[in-house]
Image (cartoon, rainbow over all chains, first blue to last red; front, side, top):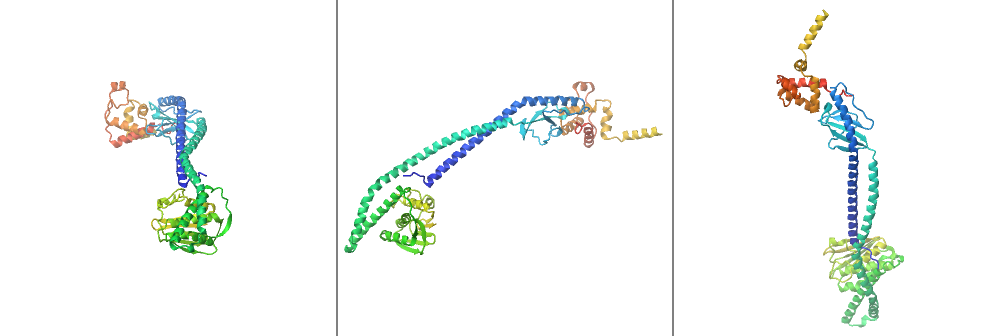
Length: 389
Length: 108
């Protein structure tokens, strides 16, 4: 038997995987940023001695210019770097650097493809407090850093992927186990059910009820209802057990005839609860599907409408073009529970019997034939199941 | 005749010279070089705003502590006298002084 996940479990598995992926990516981004900053700082500290030497050369020349008392004002120019001088109020005195927007808050920083180094002078030659040295950044370190980030990032993602895979398996194991247990139990009991039910039903059918007195007739009727309920349950369970093995025989089904037949089948059960059917069925409404499966779908919806109806309630069945509504006047389902309604083994009303597989079967059959299911329910008012195809 | 005319023009120019010429240059001609003092201020105070503020502070209240001159010079000649110029005139004189020696725009 298949152990596919229920929608609610799929949802929690998805949430877990989403959280896991997001966390992995956050760790990757943070790690990459830390590594990038570390590499940048390393590059800065490698450059610092060279930049200090450049600054010294400019300072020596500034001293000469200053000592000439303005007679010699030829600013030094070097091929391997550019420089600029600023006073204590950050006003430019002279600059060979194109970028006028210089920031003084850090000693060294990367500005686009350039590196700016700020040297604070002890003596303000020509009023210079801040000497700015600009050099080109060949970005070799950056390429190296990106290469490493890509390589180690991929290894990390692969590693996290494996861990995620094992965590998911761990996550699913208890669920799978509980399903296997329940499925196996159902499988074992189902086989033992068929023969006695068939015997009971066959024998009841041979009884001529007209010859019986009223009291006995009622008793026989009750036995028939009970046997049919078990028979339905048996068929549901068989369907679930073989759900992937049953091949559909698609044919054009006259739904009005089919509904009438199924209503007729459930009449005794409905009468026992004094539930009456109100049918509003259009002629010539068809669906291309498997007759047995659609019967099963209808059986489940009708039996639910009876089961969860109040005594003396009504069931409205409306059939229009590509539209079928089965509405009861029963207990209804609360808003929180409506999303989980198609989960297998889910029962909202513990007072009624059953394994909670009926609507799961409805869901599977509807999915196979592309039928949309819309459930509208109000507690203590009733439930309406609308099928559109 | 021409010589007399030139002398008159020069005399007028001197007597009508600006506040800096009249109040600063006049004495510093024979005292410490104004250019050297300008560069000393620049070396210590850096920016235009700070240099001008330091000059005004000194000129309004000259002390050994806020003088830019070397200790040996002060020992020998003492500290200059307090300025008699009004704040506006003092500011005007210093502005002219700054403009005269500023290196901004002159660096090549």
